[in-house]
Length: 434
Ligand code: HEM
Image 1 (cartoon, protein in one colour):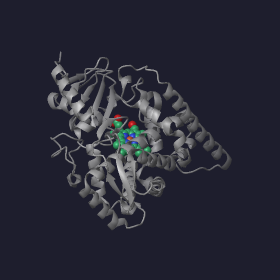
Image 2 (tube, rainbow, N blue to C red):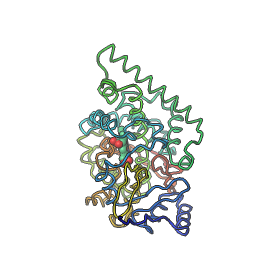
Image 3 (cartoon, rainbow, N blue to C red):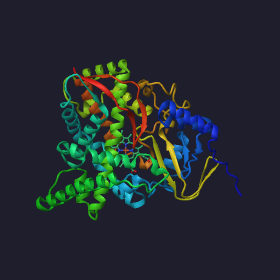
Image 4 (cartoon, rainbow, N blue to C red):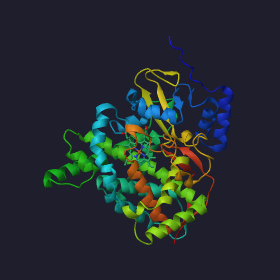
């Protein structure tokens, strides 16, 4: 019989140290660094009814995402995200996943992005036009609005501007429902606000699908977008379209909200980097709106975005369920166990990054070690929206830097673990036109 190493668990003393770290940093993520620092790249969390195997580092990420990919399931049916998104791409497994991914890929592929650039800067302008001169704004909800307008316009040809206020609270309720929380220990906790919010959003999505089907039946034509692909596909039900739309709305806007709000925070906190961004944008764009061709030349902006994603990865953790007994690195993982990989910890390991806590966009002048930089996951189930998100972030940040000065009024923020990693209490900035 093979002897496997025991997966370490934190001692009481280490748990206390982690609690002190949480109290000091107001975030559980630095505590995860404490656990990995003491126990190594793998350990088992030891909460009353939640004992996942937590991993970090390039080797475990490559194994989980590529080498052993077929032996893991994505869907944990009791997780709120699976209950909300049902057969959505993010949580589906097997053939459903592969068929839907192939079907939707063209709408998010690099080739489609050129057609989205104008919608991206126009959405930025529409929200920015509402800002009053020299007023203070929390930039997190502001960039959330921009990201929502963009997803709805580019993927579903919907002008969401008149509906933002109407659905804002429902969207936030859904996000709260799938954020880490007490459900980890108590899955069936009642959530009346969430149920109401879900009904509102479901009604809205089904109305959009109905109208699109009518349009197709009447004209034989419809907009050339992701919704068009789904509606035209044979055998794809309204329920399945709803699942994919909601997945794209949630996964496609909340992550970008995290990235953009941290990027604006860093612009405010690092004036020298902000000055370099401004110089580059002024030299390459002048007053003109961004185009795909010009975006490709904004190299410092690329590094700035990568460094933001390294320090504050919006999706900071991936989670899988072992579909069979497995072994890796001398450890036995039993069928049904949850295994996670920490993007946050991997992005801050001294093994891969010099002065990991420092903000230094130019570190990306060198290529990172494979699988040490994973903001969009990796392998065949990496982020389908990665190229979209990168172009979107460049367009929005270039447009904002081109037209506004931002002064950060509160430097003291902490990393809040919502669905994505958010700066809390917010990114309060005084905004003035240049
Ligand atoms: C900064 C922005 C974004 C970040 C950091 C991000 C991050 C990620 C990560 C890490 C994964 C893999 C999760 C895992 O391994 O379990 C993922 C998957 C996914 N993302 Fe993104 N994402 C971003 C933007 C987007 C956008 C714009 C869309 C859609 C418009 C999108 C849609 C998805 C979907 C559908 C999946 C599941 C793919 C699959 O399993 O086949 N994401 N994302």
